[in-house]
Image (cartoon, rainbow, N blue to C red; front, side, top):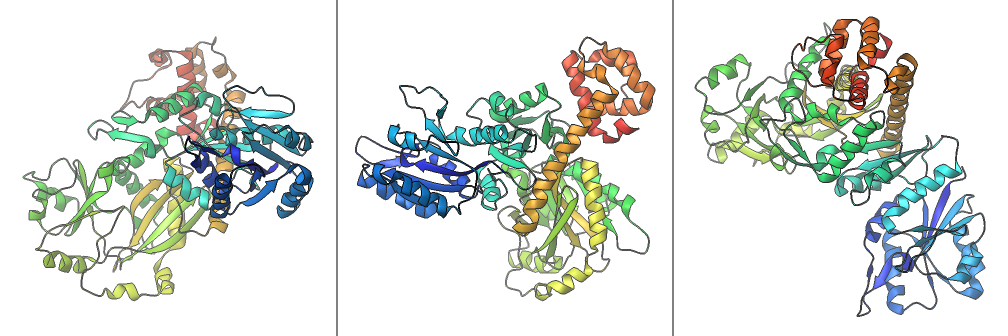
Length: 581
């Protein structure tokens, strides 16, 4: 594969000095180094023999911290130094970048050959791109240039660029596992971060797939408005711009469409979806199900006791905010043991009162990466009797906790369940049953990557799904199996999206022709698929509740041809079987 294999960075590309001679990173350099550390690229830092002692000392520490090679250049020994660095990289064939801020014609002359490409970080006086070198204005542009360069070298469609958006701590977890390499993966993916500080339009044009954790970009949620649709959710300005870019290119591959993750923001909606697990249960086998639950808008309703009984709930309960993620309070929870515990309970409303399942203090973390399903076992909260003892020792108060920071533990008591061997734990798990449930969830939610938690109820053996989330870190799964499965899931999702576009062009070429009357196209769709299935798809795409009494002429509610195209694309994504019906 004739792609860029290594980067040789002159120290001037990364560092500068202030007026007092103190050496420091230029903006963005430190983040770039963290990304390059696990990029699958060979990386070295160079310096010329004339630079100051303080700069040399600084870059030596940097090279040591990030495990990069370090090499000194002088004119007389330049060839030897270059050969040395290539040998340290194993002598692998490929292309290499030399990155610098300092314009040194002697070094440039030595590197003017097909193997090396010179990248200059532009100075204030301006440097023009030429046949001998390329220009970037900031270090943040390097990943995008690297991707563009590699795709031009391998101009056969074999390389796909994945642009990703997520908070820095989450990105770091993926990067350090080698999940976001800048060198093509075995199945042809390269990863680059998308920056909200640079024009998103120019970045989107260079990528094939956008991978996002949109919930990282939620600023606020109004719990009284957002349920079932996007109203009430305030995203960051960057995410709003990204959504506009995607809306203008509705056939673009986004993993996953933001509309598809909305149900996972709402614990009530999650619970309602999980009720469908009953459809995959079989006789004479253990059961997989949702926990019993009740949605409440207040804790002081006179009929709360009756409502809890109707929902088949018995003490203790676990109480969770209905908002599942995206805001700080989404993980403020409580375990209550009596009705008095609801008085002044510090759990945000509306809330979900959920069955607390005795499960021997072990939880199964399942991860769905496309067609593949993995799981890991983690220690969990104690059984109810142990929690009750802890509550009594604390004045018989409800147990309040943040599920992201710490889980309730049995205080002062040895929980015998914790001594169960991992072999005996695995024996009670019906892997086939939960795997079937995993694929059912993937199809139902129309998501590529998701995670969910299962506990096994003591006594009944019921497998109870207690949480579902989008794009989990799957850090409990070994890198050597999880990361390739992650790459395969992304590639497969891209192929599926592309096949949908091809089918759309094949079956409905007028969709791409804005001169065609939308009513004519709807008549074709209704004739092929029937009015009822089209009404169902149309209502869902427009987030219309109930029967909108759709007929071919009512498509006029759509304001523009581009919006019709967007709705059509949503239809075939929400109902993937529509194209084949």
